[in-house]
Structures are given as structure tokens and as C-alpha cells.
Length: 106
Image (tube, helix red, strand yellow):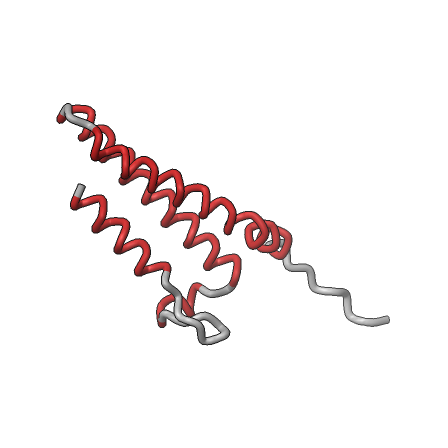
């Protein structure tokens, strides 16, 4: 008899995340953009402060989704070097920095 097939209990989870996360990240990014743009319309300091806190929470959510995507794709080690397995540049860190900078300038 042959050796039993090794089962990776995380394989299904990784596959599901790889399928769903790009769309989720896009939706969160678009929602963040809309929320950040609305900050320019706020005149009341209390409303602005609450809005800014919500934007920061949105960035945190986006960052966690990106980390999950890296884990699911096996790119967590490549992310440290800024390269994917195919050698393409990862612009995720740049996007996060730009988003944080935009939030601070609002």
C-alpha cells in the first residue's frame, strides 16, 4: 500500500482567501477613499475627529486584509524583500504609506 496522502488543513482556507481577498481589499480601499474625501467637507472639529478615527480604523482593516493575502499566497517572506515569487515589485507597502500620509494631511 502507498503512503497516505498528506492533507494540509489550511489549503482550503488559503484557496478561499486567495479567491475572495482581492475583491475585499478593493472594496475596503474604495470605501476608505470615499471616507477620506468626505473629510474635506466637514466643518465641525468634533465630526472631523470622529471621521479621522474612522479612517484610521479603515486603514487598519485594509492592512490586516493585505497581511492575510500575503499569508494565503505564501508571500509573507517575499513581502519583507518587496518582491513576489515572480520577481514583481509589491506596491502594497507604498500604498499603505501613501494612505497614511493622505490621512495625516487631511
